[in-house]
Amino acid sequence: MRKPIIAGNWKMYKTPNESVAFIETFLPLIAGHDRDEILIFPPFTSLAAAIIAADDHNLRAGAQNMHWLNEGPYTGEISPIMLMSIGCRHVLLGHSEQRLYFNETDERVNLKLKAAVNHGLTPIVCVGETLTEREDGRTEETIRRQIRIALRNISAAEAHRLVVAYEPVWAIGTGSTATPDIAEAAHRIVRHELADCCSEQTAEATRILYGGSVKPENISDLMAQPNIDGALVGGASLVPETFARIVHYT
Ligand code: PEP
Image (tube, helix red, strand yellow):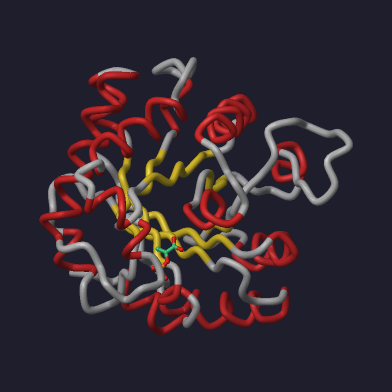
C-alpha cells in the first residue's frame, strides 16, 4: 500500500559537477529498481543540474528547504514557484539542523507545509526529539507537538501527498541509530497524531521515514518494522555505492 521512499539528504555537500558525477555513477546501480521511490536532496546550487541529470530515470531530486511566499524582499530565500519552475517536486521541511542552527519553528514549518501543498510539491516534514527531551521523557509530547502544529489548518485532502520523517536529533550524524524497536514506537506515535489531527485514512496512507545514521548495515532491520516506510539518509547517501546498497535493502 505505502510505497517505500529511500531519500538522501546531501546537506551542504556537492557542487553541481560533483552532483552530476554522483548521479552518473548511481543511476546504473539502481537501474530498473521500482520497489522504492528514490530521492536525493542536493544543495540549491546543484538542484537544477541534478534534476536534469536524473530526468527520465527512477530518481528525483528535491530541495532541502524553501520560503512559504512566492516572492518578496527576503534575501537568501528560495520560493515554491522557483522550485516548481526548475522541475523540483519534493521539499524537506523542518529538518532538525534548520531547527537547531537557524531557529526554524513549528509555526514556520506549518506555513511552508501549506505553501508546499498549495503548489503541488511533496513535502517531507521532519520531526524528532533531542537527547534531553528523550531523557526527560518528553519524546511523545515533542513529536506530537511538531506534527500537530505543522498540520494546523491542513485538511486531509491537502495532506494526501504528505511524507513525515522521524529523525531523533541524537541519532543524526552521530553514528548511533535508534534501534528498530525505538524507531517503530516513535513511528506509531507519528501515525496516531496524524490520525488525531487529520484522519485515519491520512494516517494509514502517509509514508513515515526513519532518519538518523542509517547505513547499509542497519537499513534492513529498520525496514522490517511495520510502520517504517523508508529512510532519510544523510552521510551514507553521499557515496553512490553506499547509497545504492541502502536502496537494495532486503
Ligand atoms: C539527516 O541529515 O537527515 C540524517 C539522517 O543524517 P545522518 O544519516 O548522517 O545521520
